[in-house]
Image 1: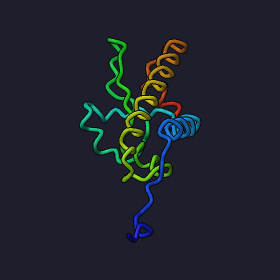
Image 2 (image 1 turned 90 degrees about the horizontal axis):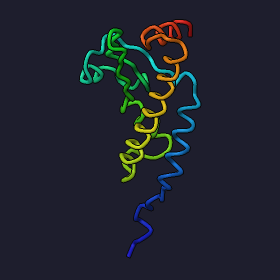
Image 3 (image 1 turned 90 degrees about the vertical axis):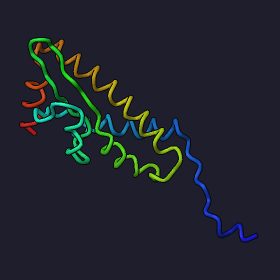
Image 4 (image 1 turned 120 degrees about the horizontal axis):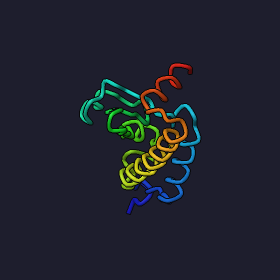
Length: 132
């Protein structure tokens, strides 16, 4: 009885939503550009970031030739809300998959840039971000 009062559950094609979201996010040069943040020394320091940047680099060790790259979950969640409501049962699954894809692509791109230039990401992304 009174089925018309029930809220309709919107069907979401998880793979299609994920594909569209990741594509739009990674094709936005400003959004997908990593930012080096020297103040972050451990993952918990990133709690202070808020919703930006999307991708950040920290923990650069020139002697070891290593760095850490992270994807900001708050930022991904905020951006994803334009595609699917946060209350949708698939929201967390799509967010987590998107974060993994963005992380993998970003790490590959940063690593390739390091190989081509011979520069570490703190040098690369400080100069790129200060020019914009």
